[in-house]
Image 1 (tube, rainbow, N blue to C red):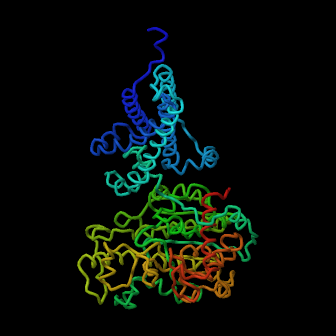
Image 2 (image 1 turned 90 degrees about the vertical axis):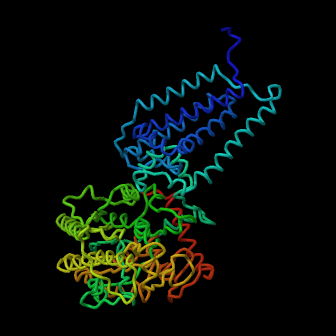
Image 3 (image 1 turned 45 degrees about the vertical axis):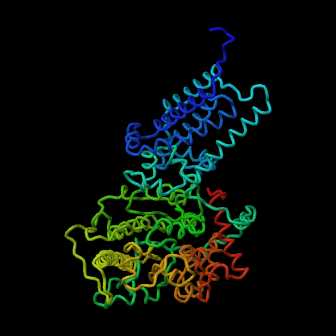
Length: 631
């Protein structure tokens, strides 16, 4: 071929076909780079062909976008290949190291990523990286010899107008698809996967390009109106005061779906068959504070309650859309763990479930827990049905407490149980399980009767766990504060089936009423054994805490209340602020607020000062989630 025939000028049709072919190749390469075998992904795609389009379309639009700018489809493909496959490799590494995929929000955390890399033993897929780099070089070389014919070849101005206009149009289409088609949760959930709750598995099966693009609109954290970073920094750098009281052991147990719904007038239990005798006994103990926490979710959202209690932030205030608080956590945060760690406590988190669920394994590192244990880390697990028993977890707590004492350490432990997790079907504890009939004056359907009898069996075991821990710590000369509460009300059928048959007044949809708040209330007790009561001057501490008469508070205040009672709230400007805010507005649930006199109002009926307090809560939370550097 003669020299003057180079570079070859490709026509518009040839360029378009080449862009389509290259987009497909880049998509396949990105899928090949994932931890699971490419054939596994392709077998899923055969059953759901739409996934082919959903994975390739963002890649294709990016190729077209840069082809307009560069006027060269191969240069464009080289850049897109580098970015898309680079992200795919990062996703593979992150899943292998932290069992969590790459999300779009990770792009804003390059500083954190750089510092975190030194904390892990990373095995880089050298051969995969070489394939990506080699393919980029090949595309660049092809771009030198094969170029697109320009539009309007005799007019440079028109050529640039077409370049910029075409790129802008491609970007607009991509952004529009991200916020419509790719944002659709119903579409995303419609594809069959082996485990919808295990996010890395979903990424592996539905394809990285599609899943990554879908998550541009998930787990969002909204910037509050009027947020000023420097103002929040000033709040956070406020004066701190060392602990004012002797150290005590603190054991916090968030029990799955624990509730006192059997106290409702629809039930006819007596003292002889009371499902919750230990809870009721503790409520009358002079060393006990009791009430209800208003949690983020109705009949679900365990990790959101963990987030609210441990950080003092509110899941429901993070975003106008529904979000998973733990999925919004991607950096070190202040928490109860850091307060107790600073006081040289032995800190731990226990949960007899999977480490990947709700991304707990990573989140509790971000929260500062020293020891983190899941089912796979525990020995000789005891089950009822498919769930680890509350009794087993009580034993784990006792053993950890004894280890801390023998090591001369004070213990801070947070345990999330799992035994009474839904579903409450007759086979929950095995086909031969017996369930005591529900004692109620209401007429129940067979479905509601089953749901309630199975649930109450688990509630009895939870109450037994509470009694066991109370008796164990009562016998100890070590000072111990025990906190025990439920993460949310149980799920008892679609559209609150069993609740409605019982005649319980619950309204999960916000209406600014007491029935709305009741839909989110679970019981709590904060109890001190005799040694702790003496060390903390418990009666005086309770009086100084000035809790509402009925003890109802938002879950975000529970941790701060424990810090106040044990003399540690002033160690953190944030938790001291929460302590003060709780006295003014003991419950903040979305746009419904309970005032200190226990009246319930809508947020738009608050005074200017009260509105400013809530704005400060949300602005400060945003700063902590997005900007604060925590070692």
